[in-house]
Image (cartoon, rainbow over all chains, first blue to last red; front, side, top):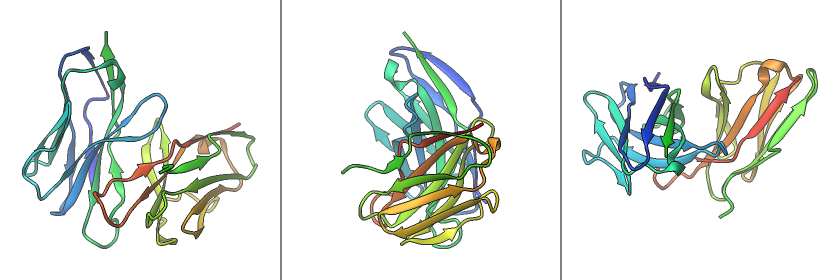
Length: 118
Length: 114
């Protein structure tokens, strides 16, 4: 079974600064996706960024980027130029791609509560 | 596209009552998932369907919980009888067989059992 660990329950960052959220995972799979989802107070789960394990290049989406270290099973999220609207819970998630039991379902970490301070 | 639609958004009920949560996935998506979110346990997968067939229900906590997907555009999660420990936010999510892999979530149904 896969596990996802987010070791920072809460973090804060000044507006316009950069913050990095940590995520590690444990799996014996070689073919998988990794995701970061954002959950603002409205509670809607919103995809922030995805990474396919076979791609060595780190994914970027505007102010959001990841540092994917496959050998270390690490998948951190960097938010640049933090904005007040980035205040939310952030969840790291793993999805196995190989057909079979447990495939295509998301396993989530416990989340990191990020507060952006004006 | 309307996204994943869940109802009700909020439900308050008394212990012992039957609760039914509803979900309409995104049209064309082959997979449908039910997740439960609590402070203590985070986001847990309860059950998921592929082409309307339940694939994995190992996360369903007890026989009091049941889920159905009678067609590609509708699913229900039922709790009977409900208990206070069932209080949580229940999310439905869907995913297409093609594309980039992510799940698209509804806004969730917040259930409070008194």
